[in-house]
Image 1 (spheres, rainbow, N blue to C red):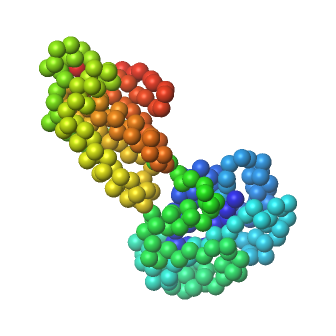
Image 2 (cartoon, rainbow, N blue to C red):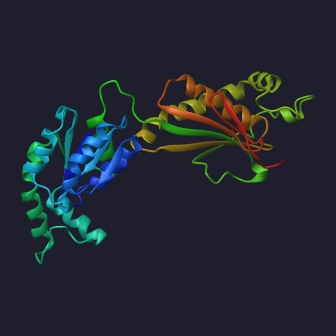
Length: 296
C-alpha cells in the first residue's frame, strides 16, 4: 500500500493514474481525519491501494506518522514524495492557470516556497523522493512502477488486437498500425478455396507454400519485436494491429492469426485478441465469440 504526497504541480495525479492502470485502488485528496479508517478498510481488500495526501488535506508530518504507527503492519506501507524544481513548478502553474493551494495574497513563487518548507518533514519520511522536473509523464509513471513492484513481479500487460479486414469495406477506425497484405498470393482464385477462410487448413497450407508469405511474416515479427519496448516505454495500454486484403477472408485472416499465435508463444506481457471483422469473429485465447460483422 502506498501513500503519495508531494508538491502541488509536481505530478501526483500522473502517479495516481499510473497506479490505477496497474490495478491499484486509488483515493485522492483524502481528509486527514479519515486516513486511519481508510487504511483499515484497505487492509481488508486483496487489491493494492494508494492514497494521495497533499497541502489540500491539512495534514502534518506527525499526524501521518502516528496514523501509520497505529496499524498492525506499518511495514506494509511505503511513502512516495513527488517534487520538482521551483522554476518548473512556476511554469506548470502558469500553463494550467490554476491557483496554488498555498496562495494567500502572496505571489506564485512565495506560495511554492511556503509549500516546500511545510512539506519538508513529510519529505524526510519518504521511502522514495522523485523529482519530476526532467521527466515526461511516461518516465515518471515508469519510475513509480519500479518503486512499488516487487522483484520478479510481472509488469502490466499490453492488450493487443490483431484485426483482419477487407479494403472494400473501408479502413478500421481503431487501427494503430495497418499492414496491406494484398501483395501476397490470393487463395480466392484457387479451386475449392474461395469459400474457405484463412483459418482453414487448406488455405493455410496454400499460403505457407509460398516463400513470400513466410518472409512477410518474418519482417512483421521483426518490426513488432522492435516496437514493443517503445510501446511499453510510452505506457500504452491498448494497441490494434490491422491486416487488410481484398475480401478480408483469406490473407488478412491468416496473418492476424499467425502473428497473434506467435506473440502468445513469446511469453511477453501482451494479451493478444484476434478479431476478424468480415467474418464476425472475436477470439480471446481459446474463447470465441460471434458478433454481427460486415457482410461481404
